[in-house]
Image 1 (tube, rainbow over the protein chains, first blue to last red):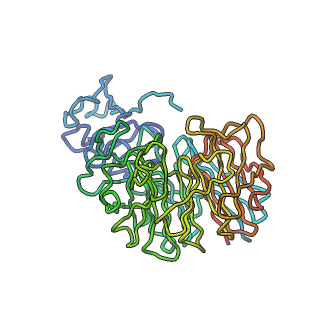
Image 2: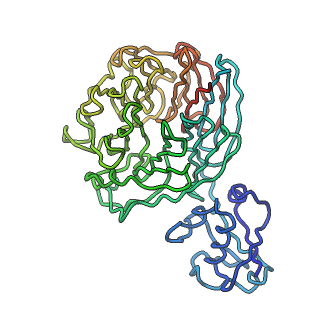
Image 3: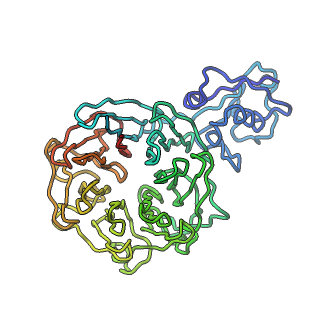
Length: 100
Length: 371
């Protein structure tokens, strides 16, 4: 399946891409397998979305799709059909924070 | 023609400042990695085109960068920093045990002889080494496991290993410093370590002979006298004449002995520089005046260097890795401020000019002297 992924701007710059990523992902299509595919294609992003070892999502990032916040779901849950069909992207979103 | 390349890490990107040997006209390049905290950039002595950089932010964590062409282009290298074994606990601010957690790379120290070998000092404090140009990292865990690790605790900036010094005369000897654990030395290439904090006196530690717990801010060494170390501690400027086995105070006539940076003149092993900061509650220069202090006697007798620096309404800080010297003659001295200025002196500190004034807050300054 061809899955669409939207990255935060900083990670698009680091990966040298613009726009959505289009990635081939075998079933089951889950957060884990999609991020696996992102990291396999763009190894410079290893460790920037989730921990190298535990695969735990970095605290200031969240996963969204189809207007649903998937951040606290199991990363092995199947993603919505619209994502699997390539109609909707998996969004990896940086938390909004003004900071300094 | 010879020249200098100044590598500046800021809270919002990296900048590279270039000049010829006159050091009068400067070209400012950057920002590189715009929007990222660039804690440290440092070039290899063995290959000046090789530069390593630490890039991080709260959202995406730690990433590492390497340039093989003097900073024109960069490649992302490995960022897998995994502590050796079960890391255990150190002390938290309140004295309770707290698990060791990797947060960021504070300092990079390339090997003096091999461009592919580089050391990384990290928070929570540990020392990592790469022998493949930053692609993979292995912890030199003898430091963290040498026995006092459970007693280490963070300073206000975190429990960071911020200083790494490679002894140019002895490839097996290395010094590191941690806030707030103290200074340590290895004489066997990083396998075993010794705390070298005797003579340090810290008000908040009741035991004057405490092996660890001292908030060392920075340590510097001159290659011609590698047994002599200079230290800016939280409070107190210190000196050791025996590779850190014993320290004595050399604060002398400084207006305040709190500060972060300390560095040594490139050609005069007894000429040292500090930037006194008012106090640990007020992290800015005293009296609204930005002054570098220089001792030509290895400490105790200090002169204020202010020509060209702001002498009123100035309230900036200069962080621990934000001063460096070049190897030209006369020696050039450079430092960056929390206000985003990078100042340079082409005459060992007698006169200063702002190379650039309005960068983001400066975290680190390093200099490469180019043939």
